[in-house]
Amino acid sequence: MGSTMSTANVIMQLANPAVGYGVARSTVENGRLDTHPVKRARTTASYLAVAVFGNADDRRRYRKAVNRQHAQVRSTDDSPVEYNAMHADLQLWVAACLYFGWEDIYERARGPLTGDLREEFYQQGKVCGTTLQMPAEMWPADRAAFDVYWNEQVAKIDISDEVRDFLLDIANFGYASEFVQRKFGPVKYRRTIGYLPQEFRDALRVEWSTDDQRWFDSYVATQVRKERRKPLWLSQLSFKILLWDTRRRNRFGRPLM
Image 1: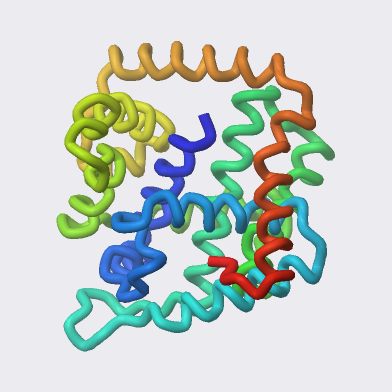
Image 2: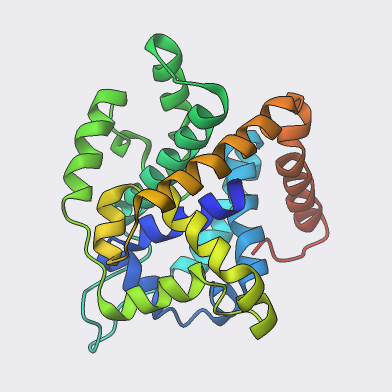
């Protein structure tokens, strides 16, 4: 459930043109999603593990590692749009997408968040940005303010043909072997598009039928039943292992990313 949702979340983040071109044209070879998908997935998951379960020192170290990577991602004279991965506005958008996905997964698995619980959950989501370069005061003040921000930003999303090709390649396992693409690509694609809100499907210019939605609803229902049978510690185990690995890497001087 989570791994395919993460691909959908990447698409959401890259629907902002500055983020889209920044990632699609990144010169940071060892961090590229299309050439190092496993490493990039581990890095992103480790980031979330540090943000949610880590302490202040863990977040500070990971922020420094992210900064070293992001400092290299800047637009050039021939870039269609101007971008700088260190820009706080772009970090806010990425954090908002991460939070949106976090809340979506939680509500699918555990039911709707309401009242004070929803607000408490939302305030915890601030770490999605502050573990990057986003100042804490940029996070919308409450969940209602987040809705206003989200709707304003979604109205501005735009996916060019170049970024669209890059994203569809990821959604279809285009970076994997021909066997993996043929066997797993169509299902991964369908699940990925299923997790996208309609505005992002429209920006990506993909079709989504009633039959697709029915299939996706059945898939999600199966995943939710599995998730609800798990004890909380088991659901969190992969993140706790990633946090342990991050601390181990730091202790032995190995790169965090």
